[in-house]
Image 1 (cartoon, rainbow, N blue to C red):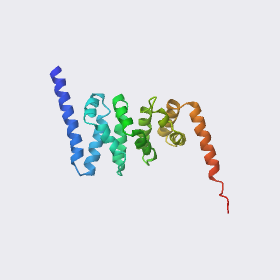
Image 2: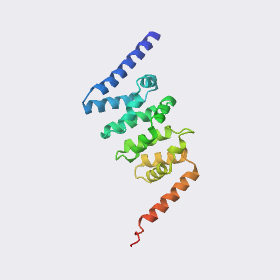
Image 3: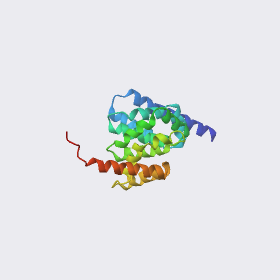
Image 4: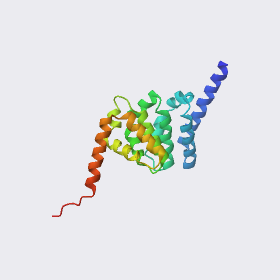
Length: 191
């Protein structure tokens, strides 16, 4: 039994390593998208976590967040969504300016990208990162999402606001948004 699982582990690592190498070596955007999607799916299985850490897949996913290709961004943040539950991967993401990179994904036109980004931010909350993740600009975004027609986005934003923020923070952000909204329609003074 031990030999079989040892062989399976070795095969699993080699396969993941082949995927990472293929991603780095290919010039085909379609092939890269396929590899990223596969790596993001493999990041969902805890059996793969040590191998993905060794292959520095979190860094690869982070690199995808600044790409023009929306599929790269979606699969990158989706992979981070799966990896960010692991404390070591969470620390790698935090140390690599991951909060800012993931926050930029909140403005994506793709709902899956936004949902993954919100989830990653929730997974990245630690005592030292909480103030950055609950910055008023992010809270304003979550408050807007909580009014979304999409039940998935509306509910996830509500969970973010409830689990990651204090009532005082949410109340203050709501008040700031109300002031901003009333000021928008005011005409500028003339000379």
